[in-house]
Amino acid sequence: MKRMLVCLLALLILCTAVLTGCGGNSDNDHTSTTKDTLVFGLNGDPVSLDPSVTFDQNSMLLFWNIYDRLIQRTEDGEMLPGLAEKWEWNGDYTQLSIKLKEGVKFHNGAELTAEDVQFSLDYVYDGICSSYHPNYNNCEIKDKYNLVINYFAPTPSAIDYLAMPNFSILCKEYTESKGEDYAMSPIGTGPYMYQDRMSGDYIELTAFEDYYQGSPTIKELTFKVFLDTDAAIIALETGSLDCLSHAPLSYKEYIMDSADLVWYGTSMQSLAWVGFQYDSEYWNDKDLRLAVAYGIDRDAMIQGALEGNGTPNYSVLLPGNAGYDENYVSYERDVEKAKEHLAQSSKGGGYTEVITVGEQADNKRPAEIFQDSMAEVGINIELNVVDRSLFLQNLLGPDWSMALCGPYVSMMHTPNYLWGIFHSSSTNSYGRTKDPELDRLLEEGLAASGDEQAEIYAQMNEYMTKEAVIVIPTYLREAALIANKGLQGVQASDLYRYSVYDMYWN
Image (tube, rainbow, N blue to C red):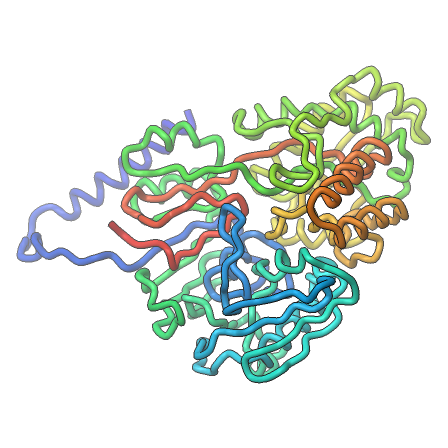
């Protein structure tokens, strides 16, 4: 019924447009111009345009297009030169030598130098990414275009970190001059320059004609916020919106049947899980965590929240990660065992837990289904529904004890992202986990490579999900973009890394 209503509304808007355009002067009927504008839909307002502040995916979409990084990672995992022309490790992976490309300009006309890179790494390290770049010591400038990044211990995975959008390169002089107001008018070396923003509505960018890889084909780029899924689909069908990130999975079949729209989907490099605050009143009790682990209904969440577009997941590792095993299972649903553990816990059942969730359907609907499954066990869940930015802020604060969440970190092709979320030294730990055994495994995995690293991470996965029940993974879902069929150069992205620079109109 909902889809029928969307179709009828879209048809009404189209018919109105056609009738309005009928008659009158037809002198321009044969005039043809190549479209060079793009309206890109987002499912939430970006938290910040400062890459040191947030891991929010909508913000990262802007980072991909305003900034560049030293190293670029392709969708198939290949590492390519970005602002770094070349790089080389020393023998024990404690020093990374980098040669910058010459002649690269920032949006204000200033030339990129090693001082900008040094400033950017220190700037980001002092921000939200400090826990995702462990062992970073300093950045040593050799000359205008050469520098060395020093690490306290072997860190071969640093290449993955440097390809993260949060490690975008900023203009030292400009950023320092703006201070706390930097995010209001950011600049980078990327293909698009910031123009204007209406919070909660749109962000306007324009092509950077002096971009070092060549001027973009799309000249005017607008990111438009759509909190209403149906409104976004209508806008796509009527042409007022050209593409939509975080495409709602409930519309997949409908879009696949469309003659005018294309569905670009792939398995998402991100986890959905149930997380706990370990120093909270309740969740330092393992029996209570086991009650949740046995009681959660993954299949119901996939069918009810993802329209079947997902797979059950029991691992903190992702396909492609070192140590990943597609056949690994921790605890499958068993309501009776869940009740037994609840009875053995310090609470004994019959209490109420309030969890905070984001207002988007992909956050709220799974939480509602989780609420039902916990009710069967004897755990009463109340939902505190808030906007996306507040939800993300809450996860990094002390004011929650249990949440449905997941890390949306842009270097999740490597399991080293787990350091920033679970190591006891991390300032970004969702659950404030303090576990010496987990710390040991994380530290060993960070310094290892190859088969040794895979074995360490496999052990860590079993420890986290089965032995200690530090976290309860739930499912893997699809990441998708919907686009007008005339838009070319579009690729599915497992981490919503959409570069408009590669796009053009047919």
